[in-house]
Image 1 (tube, rainbow, N blue to C red):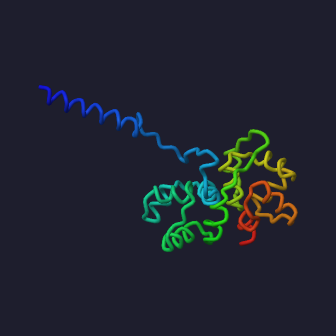
Image 2: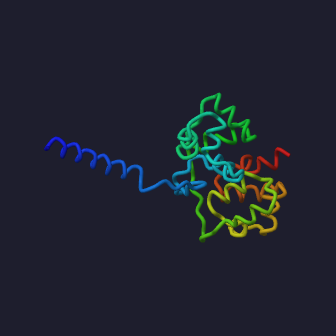
Image 3: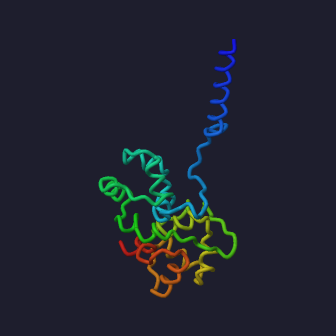
Length: 194
């Protein structure tokens, strides 16, 4: 009898341990909402969010674990050469844009002056030509109007950058670079590729 009580006690202990790590149930969100300090590769996450591609789907297409893809985004790891070439081919960007080592080391946080919310419907009804810039607004949940005010340009001008892939002047590129803390050749890579 004491042996059975001991075994049931072990089962209950394991049950509590599993409940602690597994939680009450499984809820699958499209993208987890990380804290800003947790994102090491903001450009990769921005492209994935703008293209509405889940990390797990990218992992399936690459035949790697979703944990590996999560490590690339949230921990700033760089994939092996073979996987790096596959990611570049699937997403359509060169490796120096997707996995810029200087950005991965710094991982600066963007400071927003006031709260802002990205409008999903503006993304759904408009052609997004500048995927990186649109994705960054989605990563940080910034509205187009707020970002344009913070950068110091007219909202219509900022929308041209996003939707028509209009390449701004060097002075305006520098303002965007200073706000997002991402080099202009990466921020406006979609405009330069046209």
